[in-house]
Length: 173
Image (cartoon, rainbow, N blue to C red; front, top):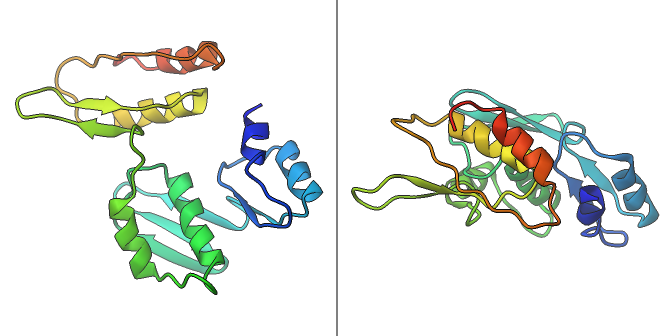
């Protein structure tokens, strides 16, 4: 179902980039039916995350980044790969990519909000099991003093069972 939603973004004979690590056969088939070239994470480009930096490989070249983005590395890597594919019409350099990493953020995706004297709030609109897992992985990387509270709301059409299952896998909540 999620794969079908993602494939709905594809256009006839227009290149498509799939950022998730595993591309379902339905995505490949849909791209093929649209005659849309499909570029895949781990095949056409990939990234490696280290403790304090990350690297992106595009073709035979590796780019180093000392700063991690506030968005998922899979999403940032796909965005950078997209600009690489558009070099003929949108020339962008490694220096441009580095500058963009510091300014890219999606409101409501691991958005940190804190007012003086108040507890840190992290807002995240993740709405599937994968997003819940990523949220908790990122939370585990933060220095936490005291209790962590989770306020959770979800629409009826979402995979509540598996989202809650992922949330329950962590004992710090």
